[in-house]
Image (cartoon, rainbow, N blue to C red; front, side):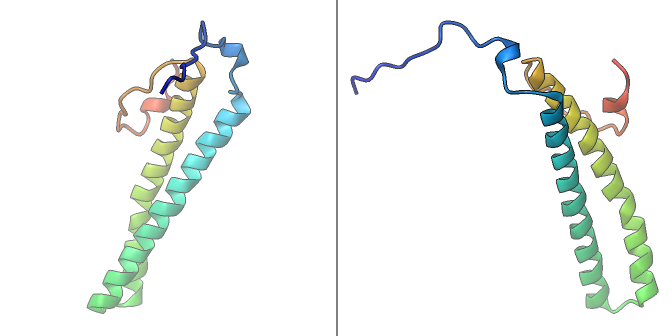
Length: 110
């Protein structure tokens, strides 16, 4: 337990960090595609399972799946804006703020 903890004298400069616009864009796109795939597949699996469980006709199943696209698109668009917002905050060495669950909040010009 006689090891010394070595701390840097000053935090590294922002220019020396490994952040780039391309890296932030790739992270935001990755999070967005992840939410699209997960929420889309969860919606389809849930609707299909309930439809087969209670025995509704196929056209009802397809109609409910079409209506289920709305929340999937909402989550995907919101995640895209939030992910890009968080990447910009991290690039400017700020803390991540509390999420605002408004679809257009993160797309407004600041």
